[in-house]
Length: 293
View: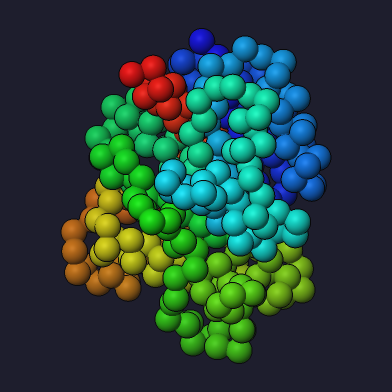
């Protein structure tokens, strides 16, 4: 059996074909340009293979309510040219297979959940954050995504400002200094005039960002009480997460019990940013099974 995965990012699309054991058989990536050009490349790629189902994890916001006339659309995205794009509808016209439609971070969260289960890690719930060009998160409890009338937007929660960062207004076009506006990759340029890869981890800005990310971890700890919080994306490294764990412990102040922090606040189990692809394969198989039932 072959199934497909689309990891639809604002910068690039990663399309892959895999089997029922989540092994990648073929993959391709290309820049995210216009909807017409990008979706055409996507359709042409999958027409080369006899896939039985497709998992799609897309940047957003998206409409995921199946009873909505806009189901399958990318809605009010800041990505130029992509607002109000009928993503699933365009694929359905030429690829007659069951499709699971969700957010990019939900796809990654599901990949981490499945991999944790396969490795016999006793995980019933987790939250997955990506911190890169933007910030988003997906949450899973007992194998189900959290969010009914819409998907979570945990990248846009509000935070207590660090005393050494009060002059920075944030970069979110909607909220200014929400989580995304304070820790996304472009904040390095906004604060320091250079990209994050050129900022040594000894720079105090990393401590400031760890303070904000630790607050995000505390929010989901107290609201959702997950078994694990996973952080991925280009901004995240193990050294940075060490800083987050220190801030988390100090801010939480032992208010509730959590697992050992190096097992609770972690990097992705799936290597090379492959969480979404693995998750898409699993969601495609799940959708196929539901369709056949």
